[in-house]
Length: 304
Image (cartoon, rainbow, N blue to C red; front, side):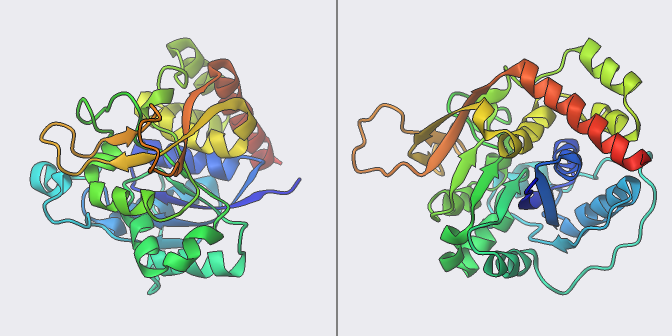
């Protein structure tokens, strides 16, 4: 079976680590590398967490440090959240990490050049690193197979009533990405009603699963985490999701709506070009079954 080559951008949150675990465990994807941004302003700390996770998974992956700060110094992330300490994950073993000299955007560009039209990107973090790629290598934006973004939404937010967290953290970067020509798939808050696990399902995954199953259950704590997992599901099972293509813009100026993704769904803007495939829904039972099957398959390979 031909696997899609993937670079995944993470921020060290439980949801981004869950997405990384599932990408590595899936039979449809081949993870070519991990790029790290900093949810708390320290991308190198994210990279250390990823190295510890790889040690736990018994895999080796190239890990590159990206931009740990939003593009705009007045971003909500800097102005309001400050420097929060990352969560300590005692269940992960220690691991050595030597920071490579090559920046994350340069690594992504090198891989895309080497495999034109083949590489998929998954951004399960604020879009700072993707914006760096689009700024430094605009000619490569149309050489990517597809880019799935775990963020945004057409109806509501989760960080504010209008804005989803990953877009809200760096809306200037998001605007650059959405205007870059990258082939975007937005998997945002629209899917939260169809990508949850009930407590019985989560307990069953933990109790019946091996090491990977228990890790997936441990990280799948809430809807935001599972929405990031759904971004990987979209890459693995694109035929099982409801996609609609719309023009999507990022609001940078609204007093109450800054950081929101505005999908122009009405057709009243004929001058706007549709730039994003929006995931509106998925079948919950199939998504949950995929979680179980992916974890079980990875555990079998791990034991064999």
